[in-house]
Image: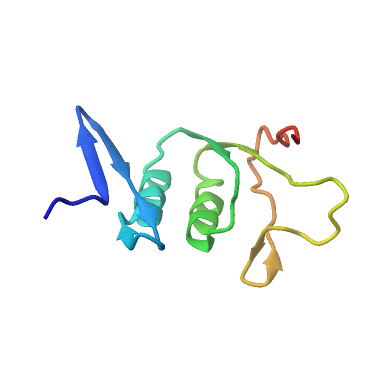
Length: 105
């Protein structure tokens, strides 16, 4: 049986994740390893930032490398925080250099 969870070609590996299709390419753990492997800087563009493991990895690296995060801040009239970490609002990393909400469509 072919492994459909990952695909590799010439130094590039794709990790597929789908609960519905029962495909687990361990995308979250691979992303956390990638984040933790940063040496000097880390530039992140992400639409939906809710996974606690990824958030913790970004937070821990914020004191070690230059961290730039571009994210979708959601609708401006929203009152409750969208992103939480262990029931507390996620605090911005101390070395966050650029943070701009994506325009709404």
